Amino acid sequence: MSKRGFRLSYGASVTIPLQLILVLLLMRCFQLQVLEGARYSRQQTASTTASDRLEGSRGRIVTRDGVVLAQDVPYWKVAIDPTTAGGRLRDPIAKREPRLRQLLRRAFAETKLVPRANEALLERQAIRRLRDGKYFYFLGTIESIEDYDDFVAWKAASGSRRVFTLEERSRREYPRGDLASQIVGPRGSFQEYWGIETWLNRSLHGRDGLRRVDIDGRRKPYHTAASAGVEARPGDDVVITIDSRIQRLLETRVQSVYEKFKARAVSAVIVDPHTGSILAIVSAPGFGTEDEWTGQLTDEQLRRRSAPQITQLAYEPGSTIKGLILCEAITRGVDRDMIVKPEEGRSHVFKLGRQRRVITDVSYKGPLTVDESVIYSSNIGMAKLGQWLGREGLASCLRRFELGQRTGFELPEEGGVTPLAKNRKWRPGTTLSVAFGYELLVTPLQMVKAYCAIANGGYRVQPHVVAAVGDSDRRHRAGERILRPDVVREVKKVLRKVVEVGLKEEVDTINLAGKTGTAKKITRDPVTGKAGYDGSKYRGSFIGFAPVDNPRFLMMMIVDEPQGEKYYGGAVARPAVLRTLTDLLDTDQGFFQAAVERSVRGSQSRSDEATESSKSRSSDAPPERRPDRGDGRERERVR
Image 1 (cartoon, one colour):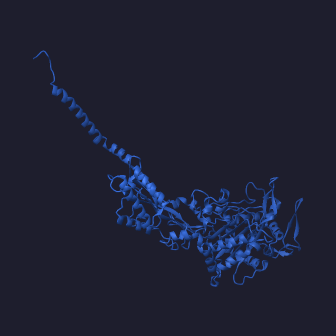
Image 2 (cartoon, rainbow, N blue to C red):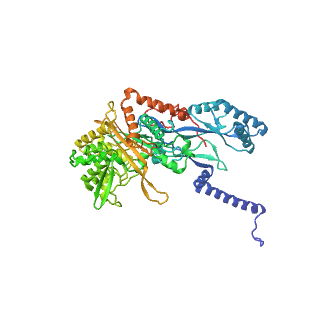
Image 3 (cartoon, rainbow, N blue to C red):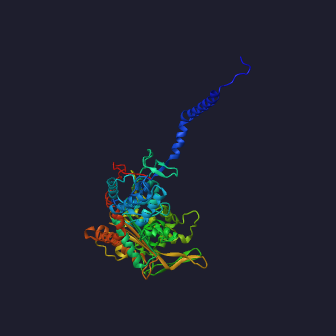
């Protein structure tokens, strides 16, 4: 063997390193494609696709008589791809621009596309994006299902199927305008204020879906064929106990009282006394137009107007409590022929230990029995009855009717406070004051709940406004008995006489019972900061039910700070309650229908736009489950 040693030939010295490099490359390819292929595939997919959220449509809000007050209405955002609309990519820009301009003008002229800006401006912007090589440009919207079908057919006929893309969206619509707006809730954000839209938002919202779409290097969607994801689920429909006809009638009546007496506020509610279902609830001032929800009112005004005062006002009930005190007295066996106002006169001095207190009546009537003290609303007589009941009897009355306690209403409500509260002291004068409606704070809804027990035969009810959420029945029935039948029968006779004798009302056509109430308001001196009763500011109220034997409706109205000489509940609230209950019961005379027609005509101008956009769906149809949007109709859904 040669002493020169082993040497590679020139060819081997070149090919062997190349072969080694090739082996290493193959090994690396094996590692990438086989061993780690799944991981890199996921990374590649993540960089070329993105998750796209599909909004689930909100549920409807429907009245008990099938009128839709709120619903989601679909519309479609229309975009154009300028690079595709201009024709072949290899053609010069000067040749593609006229094609794009012609196609845009045809789309605006031959379809129901609603441009989002001036058409000439949109055309210039689209041309600019063509020159910049950009993909999509938002043009406008398609507002109805019929217009959507026509646009899809036009795309196919014009050969521009891949030029235009449509993205389905939805907007909230209120077909009946401002009807029951305080119960329905805000027209804008669903995160503030009061109403079904806010407090049942989770049920109404439903569930959003997800899908995957192809994106380019700038993470912009460019392809419509996306992989399957999670389907969006529509929200639950909410059926409320409001009757649209009664609500419209009450809104008209409350607005009339508000304007007539130039009051600070007027509130009213109508309920079914047997179940506690709220048929109508209104406060004035309220919301006149949708614009007032979005900028014409301050935050404080929005919060004050967004909820009906029937649930939010904590006030001293005045004489309306006298019917409840009478229930307790009869239950405890009072001698109703007992003279509780011995002399004729407006004032009487009560001795409370070393102190003396003067209580005044409006009239000079007397002497009065227990029943007559309620009929003529004598504060002196009721104070004497309060002394007969004593602290124990009055406390039992407050507990029996759950005054000062929240009613369990579905939407937020105030609670109020009574002398039974832990931080309150029951003084000797409290026994006198509570008997005619002072030294305690209640809400109108609590008084309505209490009087429902008198109207329905003695059973406790829970006021409510939600009848059903989806397939869940939320209606309430009468609860435990809290008054004996004989007590109810006797109290109804007295409340009937309040209307017949105490108010000298002609009620031959309607069998009505009720009670007035007038209370001074507590105000705070801006200089000293001390609180006290203001002799120039009152709340007048009336609560009544009809027919007396088997009531169908119970109504309460409160007029806050009426202006002028008339401020008593019998003068400012009673006539409207009597007239409304008469209209509801005497339907053969046409009062109810005529009032509804007048109110509907008055509100027609506010709801024309909403009604026009929902012609394809019957707003007055009974509440049924909305069909799923995947009903076989071929639609393009792209981002």
